[in-house]
Length: 125
Image: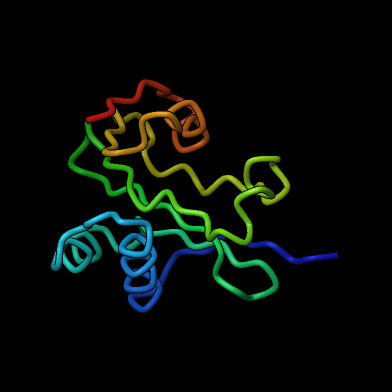
């Protein structure tokens, strides 16, 4: 049986996440990951299937009221498994009682309620 686990991402994992975003045609900004990682190093989660990084997400906390969700990415070889819920493992609650904002996820907003089960409102910019 495959082993799937979600852990806090290292600085190297965060750089990998930025490369994955670029592979998807997203532009996270040349220095955004450095600033976000410095501000909230626990914000970045990476999921590994049999030790191989395959999914990621981040929820950076801003003060007491806001959080920003990004890097909502599943690698192509596992996307079908993610859609079917096979690779399920909710990251630890990061947003707590914060309003979570996200950019560019549009059609996937309904999938993000696991990030903050307390507040499920999502502002999509």
